[in-house]
Image (cartoon, rainbow, N blue to C red):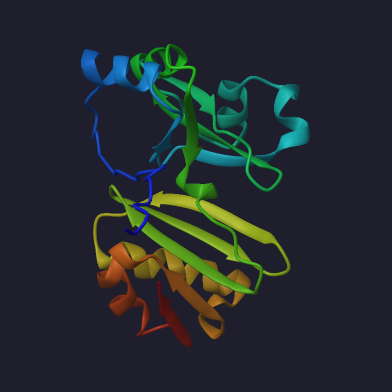
Length: 192
């Protein structure tokens, strides 16, 4: 008889869109195996790991030009490739995450890395995440977008500085509509 493999990890994407975890979900996340929570926030910035302790997360976001709302605080993501993302979240979410020690906070700005030269785009929750690589991460930003025109305008501004249209762009599979839009501008579009 064949050996039945044991499933060790499951990836589940749940968009909370301002809703909080239920009490049962919090208990489940606290007691079970480690979980990763990706924060989608237009108020995000990246920092080298070495300098994170030089100021509070709130101070880093203010230094990046983001004003925190009355009910917002800044938190740091787990490090990835020598960077930490500082993101604005609701005070309640920050308190909830602090009560879940097995939860690792991640940012979509640090979703993946690309060894080659190119741009990586992710459209998620009304936010466009742009990462440009050239021998390492050279540019990363997130901007709120409401339409294709917003996306085209923002990418055009980045192209003026980094000449990204003449380089390939990689788009995550769930963003096929974004891939169709990018085919009008980029030399090469990879949707994987």
